[in-house]
Structure formats: C-alpha cells, structure tokens
Length: 265
Image 1 (cartoon, one colour):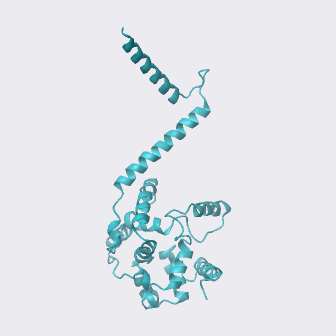
Image 2: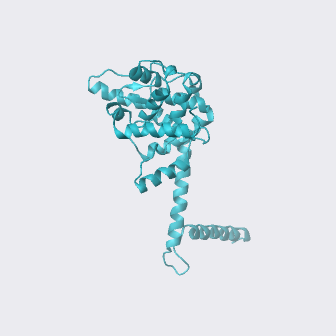
C-alpha cells in the first residue's frame, strides 16, 4: 500500500469520525446526553426553517404587478363567492377603487391605530405587537388589534383563504417581504383598504362608505372614519351588532388614541 493511499484512508476515517461526533447524541461514557439531543434538535429545526424559507420564497407569487394594476378580486373574495354560489346569492368583486391621496386623513389615522399603528416604521413584521398580543392572551385582557400587520393582512387576503394553518404562515413570510420590497407603504395601505371586507359582501372602502353612509369615501367625516376602521376586525359580526359594547368600545378607544397622538385638532 502506497503512502498516498494510506493518507487517503486516514483522511476518510477522520471525516467519518468527525461526522460521527457531530451527529452523536451520546457522551464520552456512551450514555445519551440530554444536552446533545437538545442541541441536535435545535440545529435540525433551524436547518428546516432555512430550507422551508428558501422553498417558500421560490414558490411565492410575484407581486410586482401590484405597482401598476389594482386587483379586482382576492383569494378571500373567491372563497366567499363559493359560499354565495352555494346559497344562491350574488357573487362580489372589487368594483370601486380609491387612491391613497383621496382617502380622508382621519380615516388613514383611524385604520392605522385600529390595525397597525407602527405601519410606517416596521418592515412588514411587528414583533413588539406579537409580544403585546401574547401578553393580552395570558392576562385575559382584550387588545385593540391582533399581531398581524397591514402588510401581512394584504398578503393573506390576496393569496390565501380564511383557513388558518402553519403552512399559510410560512408562505406568507416571503410574500410580505416581496410586498415591502416592491411597493411603497402608501400603496400597500391603499391596496389594504380597497380589498378588505367591511361586512357581508361589502369589499373596499368606497363600497363600504356608500353602503353605510351613502357617500363617497373621500367625504367621510371623523366619526364615520372611525366606524369603518373599527368594523374591520369583525366585519360580518359588527355589521349586525353595531350597538354592541365591544364595537362601541373599539370606536371609543380609536377616538381616544387619535386624540392622544394629536391627530385630532
């Protein structure tokens, strides 16, 4: 056996020994180490998340077209339309669009306070709000909004059904990143208020304004703006329970915070 062959075999043994030590869950005494099991599982989970994230980013739909074109429907609307068809009701789509510049300033403030008051500061994910929502659950105190940002809600409404799942949350991440990268904050906000539900079969701020108040969205006053911002959380329920304590409370809190932030002069 040549010296070169011996070195090659020795090198292979060293590699095998390194891999064996790397993936081993036993200590030097041959017993299973809880610490090593934990570390190996942690590494495996991290690798799984990385691989899943890469795959999710590859298969995530393109959003660049939203720069120039307004969507006439969403995955959420399509799902609701299936329900309407089964119950012999007319289907819906987004018929009227309001540009960001034509939205009343009070409405913009009210929606941000109700749904995502750090919208212009974060990059699509508000981890501080996730923590606040978690604390509200454990303290059994209600919060004004959930953990999802406006950008996350745009991604969810455009591309996913109402059914919640871990897979949906994973696929939502690259879409949010793409939305934040390709669109301005104002455009994301504009899309949001024009595609979301404000009641049964009522989609978009213009349709909502005409349905509830018989006027154009650009003419909404302060109270009407707060009403439509408050209804977003549970549109079908609040549509039928406009005098409920929870709905009145939401409107009061939004008004109070708008005043506290100096938005109301």
